[in-house]
Image 1: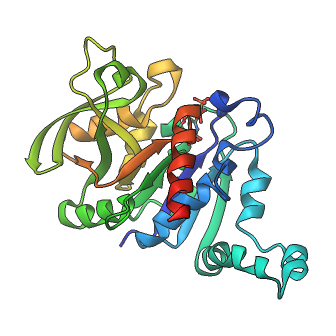
Image 2 (image 1 turned 90 degrees about the vertical axis):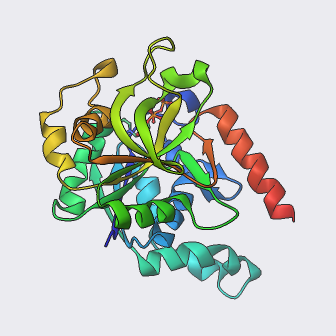
Length: 275
Ligand code: UTP
């Protein structure tokens, strides 16, 4: 059973400066809901009830968001505005939120490693990068689809999508063999390769199911691209042993870490709210 989900949220979010100067990028709202809440809802739909947040700056806003605000609750009690807190109350009541800090931004692999104290090293767990906002209007959420695949293959699962060739240098890129429709046995992974040397245009996006042995692999992984400890490099090590599956998910992903993707997501949810 996968019941725990890590949310790395310690990045600087430099593409959103100055908005992210004093606030975590994961607290930026799409309409009236912060990015991280969309991620938590997706994790909950997938069966998780422990949300392990790796924070840096802007920590207080995230912690306060997933906690009861007595003054506010009292203020709007009995008014139509109470309705606006129904979803977040459900999350607070049904999930446990735990936090730890990544003191230095040493990369996504390091941020996930910091989650070990929160999720333990006995069971598989999920990872959601909340700035990758995923939706599937036609069925199960992306993480739920991945949990189902994990139950079949019992190894690490990486969400993937095809990206334009000129964008491969922004992602971890996957090389693998399609073993069933949209499911790849990964043989190699490269973090932000040059356009000319990229093994494919299949990019890893911010949803993972990881088996706990990944922590030992991360311990042995050296800093890679940009001097950061890359989860792509740790996964590549596992992939060489046939222990990583890439999954072309059903649905849509918005790169809300970029202004363009953020605006696209805002428009999408706004249109949806009007029908
Ligand atoms: P990004 O590559 O989007 O980096 O990280 P960033 O710092 O958040 O944003 P920019 O590029 O400066 O605008 C991808 C995800 O990994 C987390 C980030 O919080 C984000 O969710 N992350 C990355 C960490 O938690 N720690 C790290 O050391 C690196």
